[in-house]
Amino acid sequence: MAPRNSEESDAHGHAALEADAADPAATAAPPACATASEVVAPGSLKKWVFIVNPASGSGSTGKKWPRMLQRFKDAATSKGWSHVDEVAALMTTRQGEATELTRTALREGAATVVAVGGDGSLAEVVEGFFEPDSHDKVSQTANLAFLPHGTGGDFRCAHDA
Image (cartoon, rainbow, N blue to C red; front, side):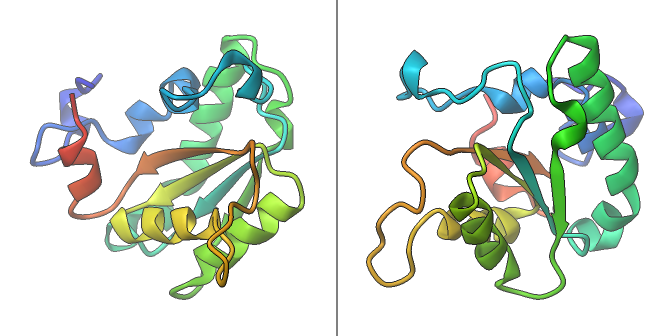
């Protein structure tokens, strides 16, 4: 994705999260293998949970998070998405907590879990989609989204088209 504002791009030319977060559709796409019946509430932010690592990006995520979330909500509202004010944002405070928060959110019915942070945050959230002992899925229908805001961005760079 090309930056919307060249002043907001990183050393790799990637747009800063604030620019990417302005378009909820960019993060809300279901996995390529999902069928229409598997997609939960398209156009709705109902049961969306953001798992935010405020320490990612050398601490910039924590500082920028309120603005990032508001821009995301504003963009969703402008596109007619429903349940915009029902999204939950859970901040991590220690390593491994994103996994625990994700499992809890999924067990409580989260439809989409959004990892906000770097590669480590994403890995922890993905781990939370699976039971620790059996490796069974915690939810058969939940979606995963990623708003990259770390320092290295290996996952983002490897999957940038």
